[in-house]
Image 1: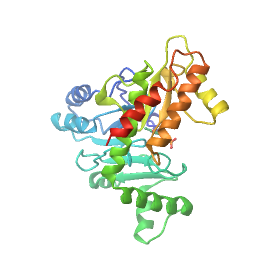
Image 2: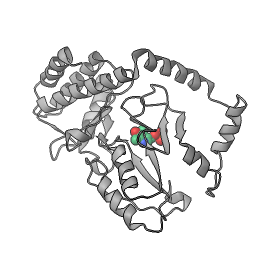
Image 3: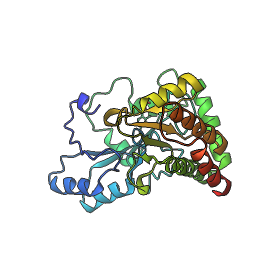
Image 4: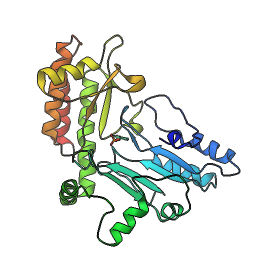
Length: 292
Ligand SMILES: *Cc1c(COP(=O)(O)O)cnc(C)c1O
């Protein structure tokens, strides 16, 4: 998207399954003596691989380099489900959507601006067409919207936020962590591995599970949908066909997760993988009985 806007983008590559390399960011920022870099972009929770990154470490890299660039974070699959600290981590722009942790249909982009980012919009020169934050601000100041507001979704968002507040944000995070940990126990019991390389980067909202070499992981997703009416996620990009994904965010309980694990097992057995029916479910059940 930045390149489509004609921006000069320095892409920092890491192997799939790893978190973002804050030390490499720091080196790049330190080398940028003239401060030509305006913004550092980071994804908090990478949804194709189920990898969580350390956003506080990116802020530290910026500070250690004494660099004034702003920090923009994609929190689409984390905000509302996993701990996210916009102020504490010095995030200038954070974006999420209605369709993940907020439990709604797709349609709303929810964007937060720091004072600094808001200030910068006054002098920035990139063209803006449909979405201009100033139009939104002017509208909000008058209890109005610059365009037709999606009232249905906004009523839904109000209810979703009430649900989150009733449960308590910390409890929502703990529930996601518990459900995800149960999934990880199941994956281990199946003798499979996550795409995420180490526990510090395990996502609490989505797990990408590697299947054995020569097996097409997408077949799991197709069969789960066709035979059992359950939606898993396919692998994307470099891990297409190599992983299948279980999304475990939003309005989800331990019991619902167990049914997903049960279907995953049936599908894998149907497709000839060496998995014992009930093995992952039992591992998750044992964890959910005791997990907090
Ligand atoms: C789902 C997701 C998106 C995409 O959101 P769209 O509304 O489909 O554009 C972007 N980033 C992350 C991290 C996501 O999980």
